[in-house]
Amino acid sequence: MSWILYFIIAIVVIILLSAALKIVQEYERGGVFRLGRFVGLRGPGLVVIIPFIERIRKVDLRVITMDVPQQECMTVDNVTVTVDAVIYFRVVDAADAILKVLDYIKATSHLALSNHAVVTGMNYTGFTGENNFPLGCLRSTTGGHLLQKRLGIAITM
Image (cartoon, rainbow, N blue to C red; front, side, top):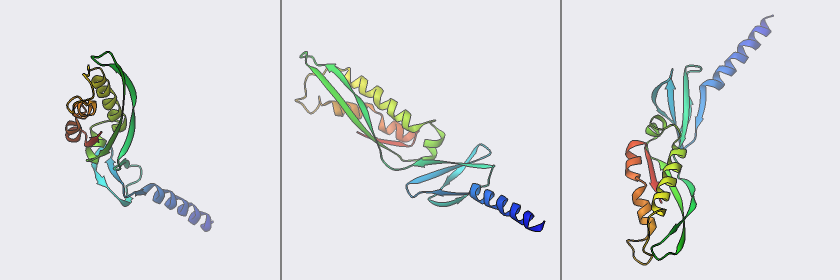
């Protein structure tokens, strides 16, 4: 009878330890929520949380690359130009990325797509001058500094 009790206690301890121990990689940070309230960032390494009371949400701090779909526009010379872009971004402040936006990857993607459409809709006079190059326009309209302050995300084009 006693070995069954020890067996059940061992299984319960193993389940609690597996729920309490989390591994956060070197390139990640874990935001810990205790009963729904943000307590702070943890990691990298072995993180101990209180099972069933604390939850952890991991955020990747590496640079993420994303393609922006091609858009066509008409220049003043009536020439059709196809413009595409690639966006590179990374999380600078993990706490802001967790708390201030639901899905920071999707938000950055939609921001890049909408700004790409705005820049593509402009009437270009040509690609000869440095001031008319669309990348400069796109880089200035993505609001990288605004996102870095508000959401903790840095954008490079």
